[in-house]
Length: 331
Image: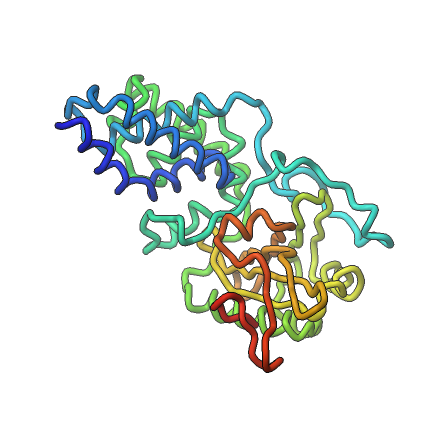
C-alpha cells in the first residue's frame, strides 16, 4: 500500500473516530484534538501499515493510544446531577457557584456522529447521562466498553488492539459493565424519534412564547434542570417552574434554533441584546421518557454554539415578522 493511500482512505473514518473519542472524553474539543492527532500519526507512520489488520482497526489502535496518552489528569468530566444533591432556586442568581469548564461533560452535534443511529441502543450510547457514567471507568476499561458494547467489536479484536489476552478483556469488561449498571439509573429514552421531535416542537413553541404553564405541562414531576458551568441543579417540575417564574424571566423574547445533540432533541437559545440582535445564551438539551421531558441540561455560553456550527448572532431585518439568521430560520 502506498504511503499516500492510508492517509487518503483514513479520512473516511474521521466521523466514526470522532464519535469514539467523544464517548471516551465527554468533550467535543478534546475528541476533535484526538482525532486530528490520530490522523497525523497515521500520516507519519503510513509506511508502517503492513495490511495485517484492516485500515479501520489500525486507525482505532492509534486513536485508542492517543486517548490513553491524553487522559493524564485524574479528574473526570461530570454533569451537575453527578456532583451534588438538588438545590433550591436562589433569591439572587448572581450567588450561583460555577466550576471550571474542564469539570463538565459537553454536548456534541448530531451532525458529527457518523456512526449509525438506527437502533435505540446506539442512540442511547451517546446520550449525556451515559457519557457521564462512562467517565467513571478507568481509561482502559472505558475504551474496552465503548469498543465492545457500543461498536460491537469482538473480544478477540479488542485483545489484539490493546495487546492483551481475551481473558483480560472479558475480566475488564465485566468490571466496567458492573459499574455502568450500578450507576446508570436514568430513564431509557422513548424509542420513537418522531415523538421526540413533537416534544421538541412543543417545547420550542412554549419557550418562544415564554408560556410557563405550557412548559411545565411538558415535564415529568421528577424532571431535572441543570446549567453547566453552574453547580446548582433542580429536581421536580415545581422547582423548575419556580425558576422559570423567577430568574428564568431573563429568557423572555428569546430567539431559538432547533438542533440535535447526543441523539437528543436540542434547541439553541439566543438572548435579546438590543438593536434587533440576539446573541448566544444557552444550548438546551432535552432528555425524554414516559412521553414527557424528564430532564433539561442547559450548556451556558457561546462555546457549544461555535462547536455546533450555529450562527454567532440572530439579526431581525426588514419586516419584524420575518427573521433571518444568515439564511437560517428561527423561532
